[in-house]
Image 1 (cartoon, rainbow, N blue to C red):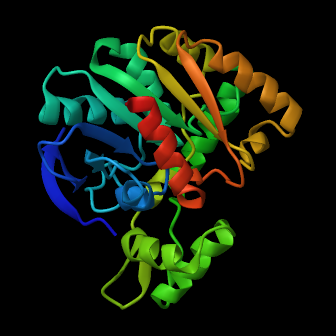
Image 2 (image 1 turned 45 degrees about the horizontal axis):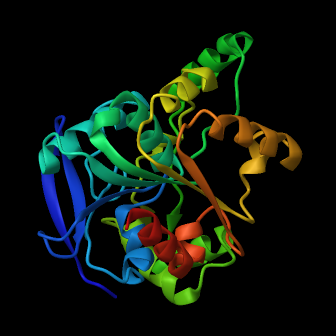
Length: 291
């Protein structure tokens, strides 16, 4: 495996963990992980790059080794603020190449429309948004949020790291044992009692009080000036958002059409965690698109 190094920097009041691969003077590539994931998740893709890159991958607030917020819930807009601060820290006002998976792809996509001059190229890995909502859903959503604040969620604990490995492989049956063992060592850590806990703040599981407004997201996507590579996994379970593959296919096509300069790639024999399932193919796609 290609070695990585850790750095901790202050971002918007939080001690933020940033993982680096490659030499500092190599071309920079920012990689943004998804929900309940960590920066080390990109190890397998980095291992398959054929050219030298300086990969910079943060742990989002409340994930991995980054400090959790001093509050009872998380707000999506804060990820945009964290990304803006991260890019300024390392690149000032230089345009950068961004790769985001799942939640990281959603953050990167909105950011590329809000700050189009800051993004040179964007690669979106299965970060295509959530199910559409209607204003009539707001009362129930606020009520659910209030109820969850009263009874905060928790994370399951595991007796040994083997339990974490089993959990990862159960969630993703395509995940090889060796990869699962590597991920488990970064995805969880032993607590003071010797039990293994997921490195994710349970508050992330609280329902957002704000509805997902797809029209607002697409308005941001329409402002993207960078070339975009839209990467889908052939066996993705994104269809679960709306209850049917045909319906989600039509919705994805409509959303993608909001982006002016977009190229689509589908990776076969891969699920939502495409960077774990087919890192060799994904690394080749990324480098072809960027170079």
